Image (tube, rainbow, N blue to C red; front, side, top):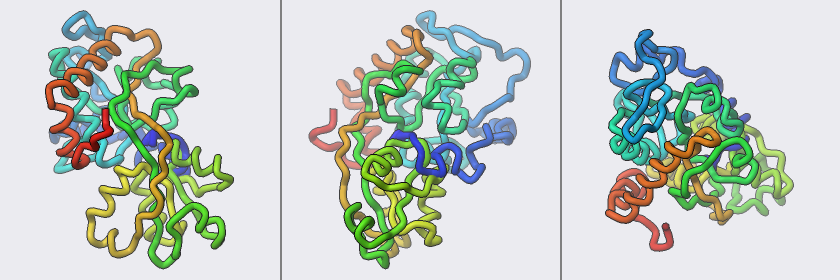
Length: 289
């Protein structure tokens, strides 16, 4: 989904009920406790720098990643630290560049425009983001690192298991704002309730704001591992959209893009990608790249 980031959460980066609309004002405190959630914590000595191979970075010794929290299993907070599938992959890039990854929580809408990349606040964006032609106009994407599908999750009491059921029964559909899930729902003739974050989407289901939601399948997988969710919700149709996730950089940042592509390609070749996939998502599908 762009995680894929596009618009159902009252927009995925806006509906997080304010949680992520702010660029974490508590970032400095978080950094002090070991979390790589940073924004405006510069000490005055932390200016632009250069990583191994002559790759320019926004902050000396750091590879600053813009993301939008929470979006498990791709990026979320666990025990005071930001972790997840995307985080682990970008750690490989940081290691190759001999720097440390720093994660900056930002509004999701900015991923489509590349605002934080263009301003120099971040070096790259990693947020379970689907590669689309529209987004390519504003940012450059890495090679695909994840094959994504959408899924319908509904409350058991709604009696729906497909989008056709939602329409036929007159039920309310939700999605995360600014995501491809939201875009897909709209393309099917729906006007989904938009939620700013994946957490807000799940809460919308729990509180009855909506009867079903369209969101990235890996996110649904994670939710259903919780017994309480599994008892209340039902997984409906799996929606094959042919989406692929990519990491994005500022247009023309060929040096960093090459480093990211190399890290992804190498990880897939030497088995590291498989280990990371299984750790954060589950068994690697035979069809996965």
